[in-house]
Length: 469
Image (cartoon, rainbow, N blue to C red):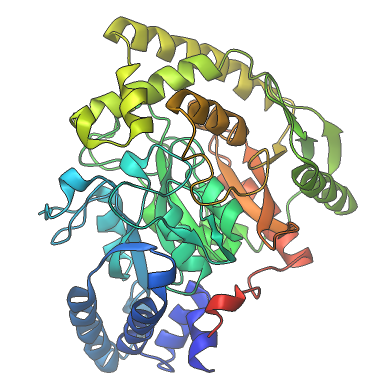
């Protein structure tokens, strides 16, 4: 296997190569560091590259591998390089949250999800780029170059996990952690042709700092395959003492679900979002083709969509409160976040918004008493250009954002699991895809269904030409 093929090899396959001692952790880390050094200037997918820390960890693991007789003693992702979104703390690394004010601040602890990632054997290459305080669906934070899409550098990689998506799509790491508070995993997956998995609320801990947006955000992954996403969820999920909400551990692993053919499911699909309207034709086509394929598999397909009416206003109020809650001086933020934070109302208005969001969420979840799965567009139209909305007022930008990401926030509000998968390309050569939404805590159903679609239409072999070198 040549070095380019190895760079685009899935994390699970790399783990097998390490266990069979065909490649070492040090060789993998050196490979990705070389690619980052050579290629990332075109993308800006990393805020921080922790080369010395990664190499030191890889050397220790390589020595440990040489001395290990029983490979079953090794954790599942032993020696596999990964990257952490720069909204999560990693001991010994900066965590900038995409704002100049935090650059240079080195953290002395690991977030709970990072601890689990380390326990699984991963080697952390560095911190991936995020939009400013993680609040925008494009990654163009002030003071640094924007993160670009590996498939077409004129376009965004999405946000807020835009750096993670760009890095995985360009072969600058095999798998990456991210988070999703309104589409921030699913959107970058849509933009970059990846699998973006947002688990159910309570599946992954927010320890030790907790969650300050009423549970709308959760940690997840960006990967090249459904199996990698499932195996990653296996290692990051689980209760940590003091979590305000949690789910019981699954009876079998999420990775096992990829090998299980789903029973006949009742699946709804829609190409439109209430209060927003129809998605563009390319996004509609992705949904229709997926629905047709699912019907060929023997599932029962029916048009339908939950009632999202009234959700935009309370969700935006919670979003505004999240920006204000950062405590950052407004003058240090970009114009959109500065304006969003200034719109934040009183504590009473926030709690009213939370209550309203919960009432609407009950209606959304009730829809899944009838249906097992919902197929929707990820976003309402194809990927935007870098800086496409830069000349608009903050109010105009917010409206553009609300319209573009409309299919995503309802499932942050309701805490339902959702997975974005690629389906093809638009006329600009940019990926498009769909999302599957499931019942509460039903990640296994989504995984088995997504794996069924992946087997019928594989996509992990597709690579951006600019980075296939």
